[in-house]
Length: 493
Image (cartoon, rainbow, N blue to C red; front, side):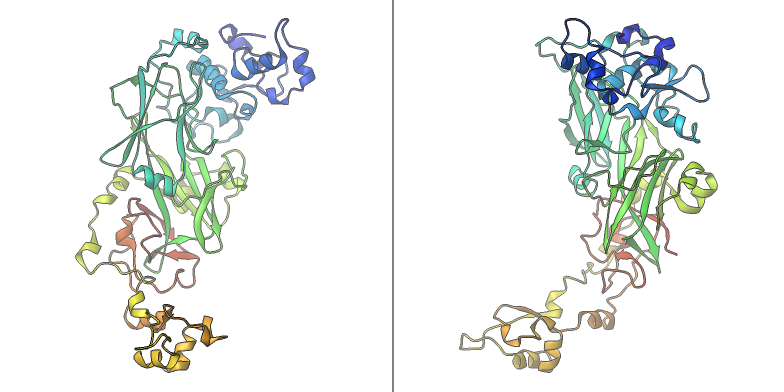
């Protein structure tokens, strides 16, 4: 056994991380005298005690391939150690670890491209104080809130909930539990989230659905500021992915989306299919492809990095593929592959999307093809001076139709025409013929662009799907949230 302050680099390779792989009998044999088994197991899980062994079942730390001094947390230990234990261990070794995705480098050929060089831990502590700050405070004293953390989302909170469905929390640390009560305030681009803490410990921002962290959650501890500083160094932006076909943008209902940053896979998304354009994050990581559903919410937008530690993220790419990426492709992501399949995110241009000219305001308001009911339908009325309804012939005569044609336009009554009742809404025009004959199939007023406002990407179209494709047409206000920019991921082959 060892306490965290007793660990040095010579012992790092012996730290056991696979506590969930130890049997109850193995643990009982290790319990110190005078301590209960359950208490002992909890101290191990929380990092108050560390188990050292010559041959760990699952080492908590792994040495970087390209260095004999750099150590990184092993992502495979997540089931054995608590979040606070991982944070404490990271704090101990951070001055020897490489920032950004370091816990995964040993398993990937792309060891260096997955790093954010500026994502080094930023603490107000001096390095000599990092190991002493992990001693837990068991007193009942209510500690005053002294510190804050801020981040920004480039949309309203409701739009984020509706289209991404994630939540945010500061992960549990030795001194404090998980914190998830945020103060929200409006900003120029969207919403600022602020949370207050009592301790200036290394903390980690969890971006999660339910309790499952999304791929956009980074392993790096973040910096806190004194309350009132109002510093926003981290920010994110949700976007709607689309594909172009015949001078129109549409939403794929088949295939996969991929979010890459610094050539590493952040998240794989699988589209639902069967005419549905929503998607969910899978369990795939850069090291292992696993198409199983990873989160219990469906999304219509992808959350991208905007800023991290005050740096605008430049090496981000979005990819649409009609099939899942292969292991060989993922192991050999190159500039040539990204140029062929992906769209590079230019954050400055993306943020200016809302400033694009609103073509819709300069012409007759957009009319949703599926809501033009006054011109296409009729509500059955009572005959004048009686309580009986109008007949099929009477209604047909009002609209220049034969009773047979009117019945054909309303096939649900074919089996029993007498089922028609007062107040029923029936079709009096063939909607598709009407839309086509009256030029209700149009192109968007503005040609598809790389980044586009939804209002300028819409068009009139009689069907939900673009003809000959699996793309959902942008012919309805409810398809894409007006707050979110659309990204054109390329033409459909």
